[in-house]
Length: 243
Image (cartoon, rainbow, N blue to C red):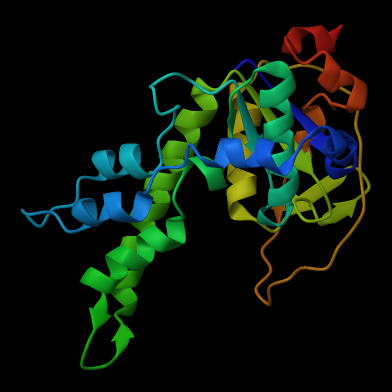
């Protein structure tokens, strides 16, 4: 990864009028039939799930032809629409391939349920074994974490979509997210990119949607250069934005 940037939903909505529903659908068509593919992987003939094989098949870190993505788009699940719009715009006008997890990967929860239904469900109790569930969850999350790291490493640029959904807690220059996955993505991007001095920004506040609230400091995103509407017009080469 060369560098991580950030933008926000306001900027992306300025691009929305230039992207059609068919442009978004064209990106979604590259998705693989994960459910059919993973059945043979989670129920192997020898009884041992191959973690590396499962990761490469279910969470591929590159395009289906083996090449790398140009841009990884990091976003809140609630900003999926904006992520799709940005990916479609970059593909249509900049000819850049974009990684958006909902298009490129299967659902981690779906994968976990497939494994748990096979190995953790107690038929006579009609419930799942707590200890076994903890064990399978740790494996799936480790597989997902490594796949995420590989994808960030292989992508040329990363763009984080900042919003009241992705970073709902702000206090002065401090920014916090309630998503452990966004926290992990931001940390990977911050640690893997060259260190650069940038201006600091902060935005609004939104209430959490979960009763269990665990906040993660993601103030590091302030180190990512901010992309506005004009910047995206020059996004052929990220270095142009650092002059």
